[in-house]
Image (cartoon, rainbow, N blue to C red):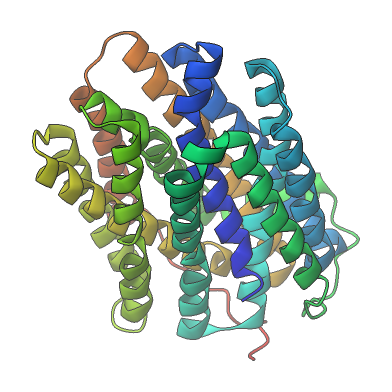
Length: 387
């Protein structure tokens, strides 16, 4: 699936950045707080990109916008290889984030516009599973390529992959919906906060905040955390590669359960599983338990992300779908910004890894409460074109 590459490149970018961080930390003598800022600046760009391009997709057509977002990512990612200090690196990462942030909302709305019912939910989760493939590709590059050729050459390789995908996306079919040239940004925002959609928007925004806070806070720092637990850089890459394979069955099980039980229950199960994984990893003192905790985190955290991708666009009618997922994911990017920065700040203050992990466990518990007692699943399926 050509659209699956949106998740593939987003994941590969996040993973590559996590692998690059130990290298640039040594090259530029960065503090933990500065490393946290490096991770956070990309997600600030993603927040802006999600909101901006989600709206633009509704107004000017999703096919055009998803090509533009990949072009922004490709050019800025190439520029990253030529940065010479941390400030240049952060500026380029911000621009890269704008392109990446616009990718996922637009790709998700295209899929949501094209299918209906359980088939739509399954398709959204399956394209989201390309995230796992992207993480695996990035792990292989980091494990086999980066130690020999450096992080700059690795970034150039990912740019070449993205440019090839740009050619493929030119052949996407035309949008299934009519472009809405009348809705301004302000009107679109007001509509997703109207009485009909207000509760969905608030709950989805909060859940995206929690899931991205947990995911980016944990996974951007995973190689560095493994090093702090006593593993070498090369070994930490190997562990991340191995645990990356656990993401795929997490997605596939979620897709299978879509026509077995309701989506809220599936999401609740996956958040509880993430809590379990985080608890085991935080308190692990042996190689086996570190690996087991990492596998559970990969399985459940990414599966929860896939369920949210399936859930979010279906809560809005077709003319508001880009704005709905764009806004709620933009709020999520705030969590993605805070998570990595908070980890870096906490490590700089000498706070233990175990304590840091409990930040994320508390956030996940709040998410479980929202799903159980507040959220409503209101599938907007009446206007979808079945394919």
